[in-house]
Every structure is written in C-alpha cells, then in structure tokens.
Image 1: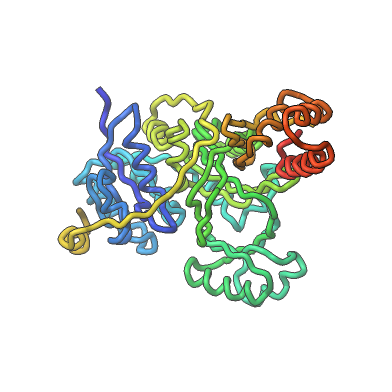
Image 2 (image 1 turned 90 degrees about the horizontal axis):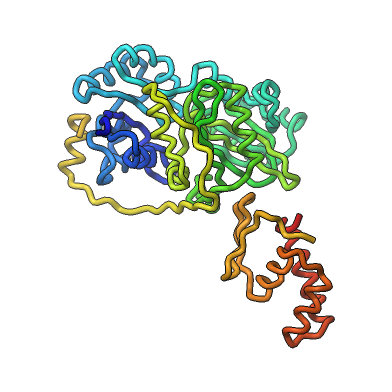
Length: 347
Length: 79
C-alpha cells in the first residue's frame, strides 16, 4: 500500500508566463511510489491552477514574500493545522529566500522541503554569475549589475551592443543602444527592484537543462531541452528533449562541484562553434518540468522522496526527441467559487 | 563525407538531429541520397546509382547534388 503525502505547492499561475506549479502537480499525481493530496498555495485569486479540475484538492491564499516572513510563517502554520502538511514545493524565485531561511521552522513543524542552501542560492544570482563562472570553470557572458541610470553611458567601455538587460528575478530584454537600456532599466527596476543586470549577448541557440541534485554532488536526473516555439515573453510554448551529452556532462559537473540540493534549470547558449555559455541558473524546477516526466524522469517525485529521506536511484536515461506543446483553454468558473476564495482565502 | 551517426531518418523522410533538436522533411530523392551516404557510399557511387535509376543528365544531377551537400553541411548533418 502506497503512502499518501499532503504536499503544498506554489506557482499555480499557468498563464503566458507560467509558473511550474501545475506541471509539478501533474508529475506528483503520476508518482509510482506515493499518492498525494495537493494543497495549492496561491498569491492571486485568478491563478488558473486554482480552478483546473484534478489539480488541487484544496487551495489557500498566502501573503506575498514582501509581507515579511512572520506573516508567511503564520499563514503556513494555519494551513498546516488544517491540512497536516508533509512537504512544500515552492516554485517561484522571489519566494525562495523566505522558504530557505524558514526551513528550520518548517522542519520543526514537521514540514519537509528540498531546497538549495542559502550559499548555493546566493552564489548563482545573476549579479554573481561572473564569479560563479570563474569559481566553477564555466563560461559565462560578461555581466554587470546596474544600480543607477548614470552607469548606462559607460557601458560602451565594457560591452558591445546589442546586450541583454535583465531583472534580478525575471524578465530579459535585448537593447541595441543606451536609450533602449534606459527604457528597459526603468521598466525592470519598477517591477523587480534593483539591481538591474546587463549581460553581453551571446549569439547562438538557447538550450536548457532541468536537473535535480541530491545535495551530495550527485545528479539524480537531468534532461536537456531546446525551445521550439517561443512566446513574446521568451517562454517556451513548445520544446523537444535533446541528446546532447556535452550539455549533460556540464550539468553533472556543476552539480558535482556545487553539491546542488534541489531542482534547477540551467539556461545555456550553444554557439555555432559548439561552445556553451551559461546565461542563468534558476534555483527551482522550471515550468517545462512535465516534459522531463514525459521523457521518463519524474523529477518532482524524486525530489519529494529525497526530501523525505527515502532512497532515490538516479535516473540514467530519458527519451530523446520527446516534445511538449502548450495550449491555452478557457475555464468556466462559478462566481461562488471565486467568491469563496476571495472572501475566505481558501477553497 | 559521412552523415552523423546519431541522425535519425524515418522511412517517410523525416530527419531528426538529437543534438540540436532540429528536424527536417526530406523528399524521396533526398531520403535516398542521405540513406546512401549513411551506408558510407561515396559520391561516385551515388551519382552512377541515381543516373542509372532516374531519367536525369549528369550535369543537372551534379548541380543539384552539390547544392544538397552544401545544405547538409550548413545544417551540420555531416561529420
């Protein structure tokens, strides 16, 4: 008889900038080693994952990380009293700091997580990527953190145009001149705060890897993917698994050296000459995780088992040439359901 | 010239490069030529094979074959 775990999950925003919550839940519901009750944690009352059939068993609204960790912990305690949580999988970059620093409190409550350490989380931040590249011998494009508009004019001394302007958590825009950098700087800093990062534009094909590290330097699973169809927000609307051994070797090497703990996504540029540049490390499972599941690696299941201290045998293969294609669909929702969530904060 | 070993080509002429994720649709004659290249047949063998099998003069075939080879190189189909 399989055990049943109560697992809370954030990232239910299956929008055109999708969070990983729904595909993570789909993976967990297909787990072979346990059954799940899914408790969705939503920041906004219009996150589509709240209303999708067969995704969440219960849904609770939670406060934004900006409300402070006390409000967050109080809310988690309340949810835990009602749902007896076994595990939480946070799926947003912006909330990870709060979850990582609250791990001990959560653990005392009996709620497990499987997250990177604070050091691992901090050293792969976009602003620290050049040092990261040097430390772990990975090629990264030159980048610089900007804290004021006055620094933009001097960028020509260090960078050629075009260059990428990035938010510290999300968003990246290509800029062909200083005026465009100013525009993007203002837009990004208003949304995500400072610093804003500029990064040299590496020309080539973007390839991504989803991976799971066990915290001891071992890679539990890894699947590389190339986006085949990209939205105007730069998100994958379709993708295909690759058989790129060099990319996998690079991933295993990073996990081995950093002893990465938890899910991650490596964003790389492969140049025409076959070189790889690391442009970003996302410290969590990406929204295309269900492709890895479809290709034979159920990484959310493996992550929960690792977090619960179970023995997990590393995946050694996956199906190459497996594709995913996203779609959008209108969900019809009764006002009473929306009202219940809006007024009570739970559903 | 050798077609990369990992390139998969189906009977319908659908070709897939697992390293880049690129896929291509080959017409029947392109499929036949790529399969001959995969079987390590050289240009001379392919030319005589095609000239024998189809109604085409050598000059026209050679011109088209050269174009096709350039395309294979461009898409990194060959080692």
